[in-house]
Length: 272
Ligand SMILES: Nc1ncnc2c1ncn2[C@@H]1O[C@H](COP(=O)(O)OP(=O)(O)OP(=O)(O)O)[C@@H](O)[C@H]1O
Image 1 (cartoon, rainbow, N blue to C red):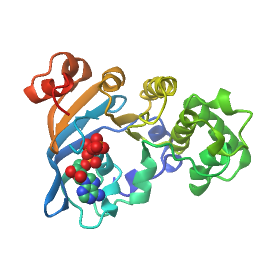
Image 2 (tube, helix red, strand yellow; image 1 turned 60 degrees about the vertical axis):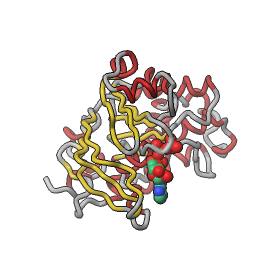
Image 3 (tube, rainbow, N blue to C red; image 1 turned 180 degrees about the vertical axis):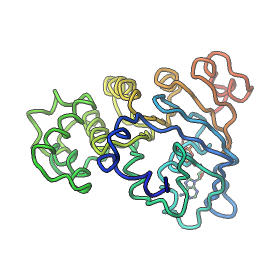
Image 4 (cartoon, rainbow, N blue to C red; image 1 turned 45 degrees about the vertical axis):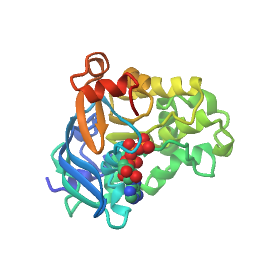
């Protein structure tokens, strides 16, 4: 299958493909230079599995967000940025010149630190990407909007407020709305860049529960500063330092019995 074909949106794929549940992601020898002097990633290799949550932790500036942004090719937009190495999602090389980046971004959804709903109604926020993808019939839109809001654990709170402006929702509700908007277009991979760092503890808990609920259907990759959160939500955790992955292991092992001294120093709060 060519790189282009394998990136078709779900509703254009054969029925069997619709049952897929995330993609395996492999990173091989990935290095990224923002310019000649700034090497933000240094020979990163990782195997990230579908239906699991993988967390990137490490001190500020170690390259967590840069690595996350490589998975939907967001770094491509930065002038002077150069990438070496390879990322494959299942068998597909996502940096292959024939890959359609806008289709890639439908398959690889991203949620940012600060909730960024569009300044439109709750309903339209979720319907937006579906309309762009060509879904027009009101009944089908209604169905997908409801399904996505339910999946994002938000339906009960907003079912009577669908026509209200999304900006009137609380921060925690806005973040779940953004997750509903992201999953409405049925991505395979969900990238979460500190999704709960601007939220209160109750909203944070809801987002963590949601991540747990969603993982059976996606590949979830999360960047977090919060080590307790990484320990709670992730199956696998990568500790990064100065652009390198120092240790990659199950969250259980990495947090209780790290192999590398640098990991141990970080998780015991000795630096970072
Ligand atoms: N657009 C950019 N242009 C140039 N350098 C950048 C750019 N974005 C990030 N960097 C640099 O790349 C390195 C890694 O940054 P990155 O944001 O990936 O780290 P991080 O681990 O996510 O940090 P934080 O936890 O503070 O968000 C840092 O030295 C940063 O200054």
